Amino acid sequence: MRIFFILTLLSITLSCATLDKISGKRAAEQKNLCTEYYNIAEGYMNIKEYAKAIPYYEKAMADADLYSSAYYELGRAYALSKNWEKAEEVFRAFLEKDAENLDLQMSVAYILAMKGDFNEAIEMYRSLIEKNPDVAELQKNYIAVLLSCGRAEMAEEQFAAFSAHFPDNSDLSDLKAKITSALADKASDAEPTPASENGE
Image (cartoon, rainbow, N blue to C red; front, side, top):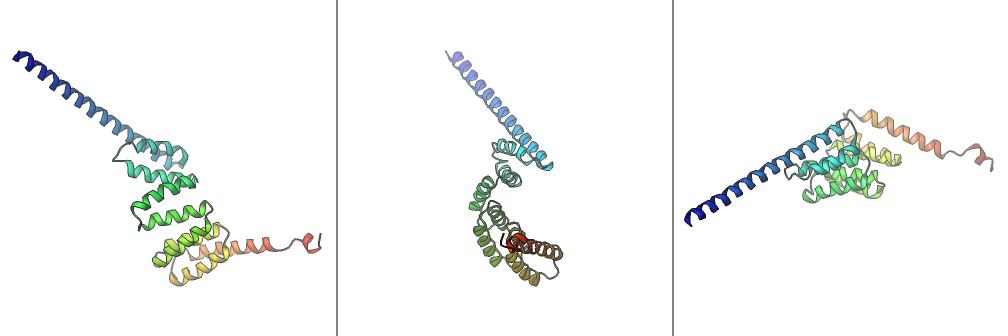
């Protein structure tokens, strides 16, 4: 009876050890697979195939150690493939955990503008600039957003403040040229055509 009990106990112990080994092997395989998915996604990002990277980042998120990195890169992939709704969802999720992160705030402001929520984007940029007046990149991004949403006059006003605050910035001449071009385009669009001048 005692021998049977020892053999049974030994059998149970071996079975548990075997299960642990199999379980550990499966976990390692799953981790390796998620790493592969992440690397495939990165490869697609490197060749600018952003939409193709998305499902692989999603699969990589199954690994807890890769989750945050994969989720962040997923947000970037959404943004770069112009899926603004999904990109906003990802970056706002990060912003909830790190509300003072300027890079995340700038990303959300940019995404808002790109999805057409111009007024909300402009208010967000203004607030960020007020709190971070010495961040040149923030002001440059704001000017670029204003130009992209057809608000050349506002871009010109912001440029005046930007150039006064950062007189040695290397991007001044490029920004000025873009603003001048946008204003000229707007002026030519506003000019009446010969037909409208004649009342036709």
